[in-house]
Image (cartoon, rainbow, N blue to C red; front, side, top):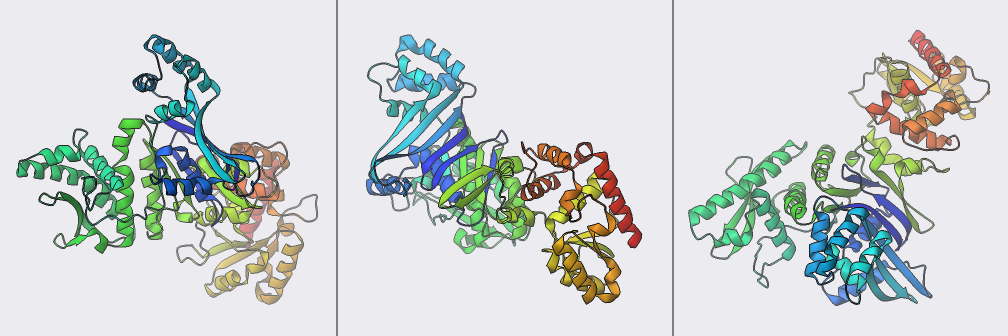
Length: 581
C-alpha cells in the first residue's frame, strides 16, 4: 500500500490543507520561517497512532496541543484523512488481517475481497474531538466506500479497531526533526538494559535486513562461531560503507572519511559505531566527527538503511523530514537533492525547507507554498498559488535564490553586460532572447534589486572596462531612474535606456511584462501548469515565467506558445541592443 493524499482539517492553525503524494514520491513544502511547514508535517505524523507517545501523560499533552486554539466553546474536531492506494496483493493482506483479528467471517471473505478490488483506495480519518476546549476522545473512521466494509464484518462493529487493524499493514509514517537525535555511544538489543533504545534497535534491524533479508540482530547473536559472526559483521559493514562513505565523500565541501563500521562487543552484548579517518588508520567514535558527518550518517541509518525492510513489511514508507541538512555545507546541501530522489525511489518523502540549495527546480509541480496569514496556516500547490490575486515575493525568495544569479561573481563574463532592474526582468529577457528567438547571447544579463539599485552595477562595469547597457522599464520609476543615472554617469548617458527608447507599444508607460500579449500570458500560464480564467496579475505572471525558466523541457516549448508579433517585438529589441555594443 502507499499513501496517496492527506486532507488536514482544523489541526492547530491549519483550517484546511490537502497534500498529494506524487508517483515520483517526492514533495517539498517551501516557506519562510514560521510559515507553518512543521505543523503540516506534524499533522500527517499524527494520523498514525503508533507515533503517539507511550506515556499517557505525554499522549494527553500532545492531543491537547492539536486543538485549534480559536475554537473554545462547544464541540470541535481536528481531522487528518488519508487516502491509501492498494497495490498488488494488498486486498489479500487486508482480508487475512481482518480474519486474524476476528472482524471477518470465513463465509464472507470472498465477497469482502471482491469489494476491495472495486474500491481500490481506502479512506481513513483520524478524528480528535474536543468539548469546550478540553480533549474528549480520538477515533478512527472509514469514509466513502470504506463504509461498505462494515456491512460485511461480523458482530457489533468497533470502527476504530477495524481501522487500526488495517493500519497495522499500512505504510509507516516516520517524522524526523532534521535528524537531531544523537547516535548513542552504545546500543543494546535487550529490552530494559542500560543502552536499550527501541528506535535505534529498529534502525539496526533495518541495517541488517539491508545487508541480507535473512539477517536480523537475533540471528546474528545466535551465531556461536566468532569467525562466522565476524563474516556477517563484515557483510553488514560492506553494505554500510557502500552507501555512507562513498556518498559522503562525493558531497562537496566535506572532509574525507575512509569508512564507518558497526562493531559488536560480544561480552557486553552491545553494538557501537566507529569512524575510520582519511589516513585509514585513525579510529574515531561517531561523536568525534563533524556535525555534518553525524547528520548525514544518521540520515542514511534512519532512512536509506531502513526503507528496504519497512517496504517489505508495510509498503512505501512515508518520511517526513523537517528542515534537513542545516549542518551541511551549501554545496553538500545541493547534492542532498539527489539523496532525497534516491530515497523517494521506493518510499514517499515530504520535506520542508526555506533553503535555496535544497530546492529541486525540476520538481516544482510537487512543491507547496506554506504561509501564515491572520493566524491561519495554508499549504497551496505552487501552480495553484500563482492563480491567486496577491502573490507574495517573499515566499518565493528561495526559488529566486536557487536561480543563482550572482551579480558580483567572477565567473560571469563581464566583457558585455545588459543591466536590468531585477530578477524578473532577467528571467523575461533570458526566456525571450534565448528560448523565443533561439539566440546564443553575446552579453551577460545582470539583474539589480530594483530600478533605483543599479548604481553599484554600473560603477563595477565601468571599473572593469565592460561594454555595458542599462535597460529600465518605460514607467514612471524607470524614466526617473534613467534620468538620475544619466546625470550621475554623464559620459555613459548613451548607455542608459528605457524600453520606450527601443520598443513601441500603444500605451505610454509599460514594463517588460507588457511586451507579452494577454494571449501570450494565458498560454504561458498553461505551459507552466497554471489554470487561469482571467489573465494573470503581474505577480502571478512573474512566477509563471520563473517556473518556465527553471525547467529546460518547458523552455524548449516557449516558441510554440508566443505570438509572431511578440517575437517580432523582441527581435527588434535584441537587434537594437546588439547595435549599441
